[in-house]
Length: 316
Figure (cartoon, rainbow, N blue to C red):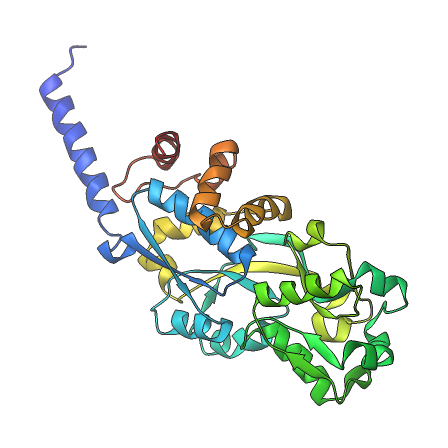
């Protein structure tokens, strides 16, 4: 049978145009992907890595530093597109009103499992007997009746303040000291130089787990959740984002981080590396993760995503 190459060419053109027309349904506004970062180095790490991937796909990611309540409000008002740091269950009381009102959508699968978030102490204090939440009050005078939290508006701070207000574990009279992640860790390191007692918010993934000898306190299940505040981290978006920007949504659903990945990138960030630079350096050393992350993902212009990102990394 003799092929009519004229017709073959015409059919190919029609198929190509049809595909382009279908792809054009993703709004031009999707090119700008606006992230919220609450100032934690783990969220900076995942946001940095994801930004590098999006840049390779032809998108223009940007980051707004905001407290947790402001991040959720930004998703509600659609001024923020993506928040990779919804820690469940610690942030659940903050996000629940938005979820019940249909103002925020949480993607079904967590982007990180096996995280933890609860109160911690230096190992030397644990060895002295401060091993559980119920031991904190016994060490009140030595602790100067203080528990160190992080940035104002943080969910962990709210949980600590609730314990104090309700006199849980006999903590009435304690003060919750708000600061920042960096400020809190500086206080812990300062205390460590003289083996001074201190109680602080700790979490994993974070380089603090390998840079300091620390122990998580037992008995805080009613406050931070079971198994030392065991948590899963989810991605939150505006309720219509999946329909409006389906290609970015596929990438977001594919993202699967590990505590090891985040710890490695966070070390670079804490050594004063830009989160995007740290993310790019890690991806160049570990490109195999892109196979799963970019499955079914296109560039903004509709080409296969994996070759584009691979090429972008090689040229950076």
